[in-house]
Amino acid sequence: MIILILIISFYLEGILSNIGNILPLFTLISLIIIYPYLYNLKKDYYKICFIIGLLYDVAYTDTLFLNAFIFLIIGFFIIKINIIMTNNIFNVALISLIVVILYRILVFIILIFINYIDIDINSFFVSIINSLFINILYGMLLYKITDLISKKKGIYKMD
Picture 1 (spheres, rainbow, N blue to C red):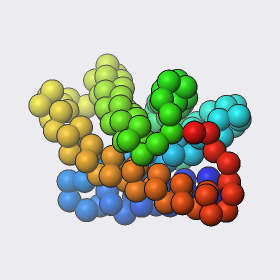
Picture 2: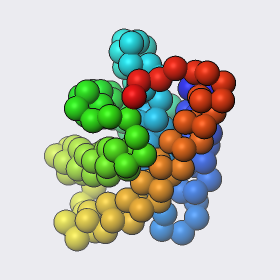
Picture 3: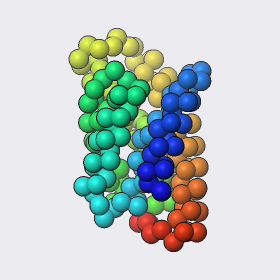
Picture 4: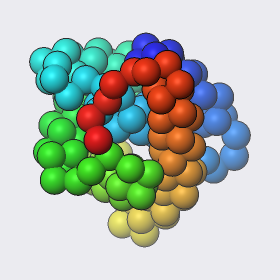
């Protein structure tokens, strides 16, 4: 189920990114959803974060290893946040909000620091706002679907 979630999110992100001004981060959101199934396998979770980030770099950006390391950092924060919060739909929405904002801030800071882009702060905030709704909605929907499947199939996850 974990691999399927990652593959669907990865491809769906590619499809939706070609439509208008939508800035999906479904691959990151999928990392939030899969963590409760891998909470005893943190090393494997970190490997998945890095590999998915690397694939994200190859498929969607021209910045090799940038997203691999950012996804790894975000994975660390997802683990830390999940220690504090229980696993439910409202917390998934909150974690999605935090992860999207954190990702955008990290990318913005790094790309400005290496002088890769020249973007004003207003455009930065617009990019965050444009992507929040669709990503939070996707996280909540994916949580509900995976929760139903895991209950039906008897797949254990952290609560």
